[in-house]
Length: 76
Image (cartoon, rainbow, N blue to C red; front, side, top):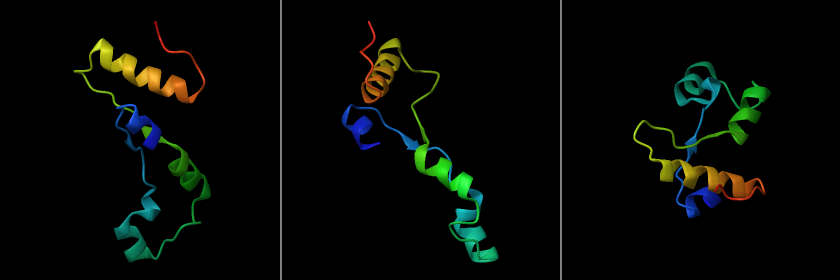
């Protein structure tokens, strides 16, 4: 996330597992470890910018930044 932010691409946490939400933790006493697959996904996933007003330049900026993380050349 920090590397993408430095490239001008804002990201967000994609999904916080329900059992880790404060209300569920408080109400049911859920804690990390209850749903290891959901927690693993949560630790690795993020949301990239995606909105109707994105320009072609916006899309290129996102794909180039993600591609550079993956070792791919920039788009043409």
